[in-house]
Length: 148
Image 1: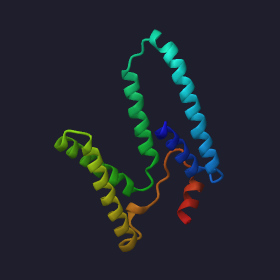
Image 2: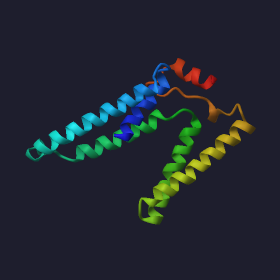
Image 3: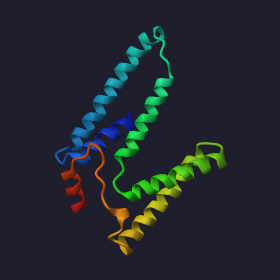
């Protein structure tokens, strides 16, 4: 539920200047309430249903791809995402565990921070820093947030 709530609230905060923290908290509370009720219903009815789990795997992959796309703000974000993907594969193979994801995340985050710091200080007009308008975002909200 945390990932889904984060995605909803991230999109709302990015596109709606009137979205408040109390509304974000309401999203959290209602989604957890319905999650609990759904679990109760699922435990009572679930054993009678047969569901193909390949659909669930596809849905989770699609969810995470959507979350990545919604975070794309500039070419630098795309570059760091590609670097993270390469490091993830390398460190997953080297460590043979999901610890490789943690290592690749830390290294990629540091590289992204260092690149952004370098570009903002040394090359402020770099193409990599241009803001991109992600799907679902309002152009005016993106422009307002970049002015602040």
